[in-house]
Image (cartoon, rainbow, N blue to C red; front, side):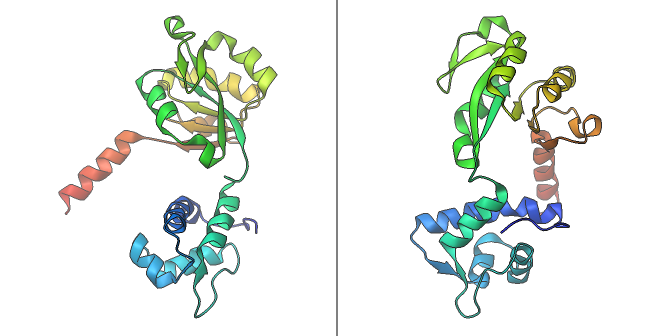
Length: 210
């Protein structure tokens, strides 16, 4: 099953949540679930769930519901987590260390093969069993190991300076924790921005309007 043209980004952004919930149900030993029961667990309407999944083909059977393991695997294939993509992480400060140590990259289709920082004092320190390398060695490392994804845990100015080189080196995807708008300068690469402050302000709004 492949992604058809015209699927909205809002549907795509809901897929990881389906994947996570179905994975939890699978671990609990459940075999099947109805859209009604799934909606009660996820907070989406049953109609929304059916519409979302119908974007990618037929799944559930009337009177039976969804086979949890099958749907979990299919959504994993849509998301691409059944593949492994080599990635590098740039920025080994507090944020970079936390991301490197606490994210299960392998379960989500990524393999961190290199960690970089411009601070020479960090060179040689180990994270995830990998030595921190100085960013001066990025070119040679990428030419030799051909990563396709970069996790950017660096300030906006540093990201703006470094991204053109990364694009030239063949980095196609960016998990971007900086506030630099990569997509505006490089529309042909895939970018997922992570703005923690935006999330915190969203929580502020929800509390204010509770």
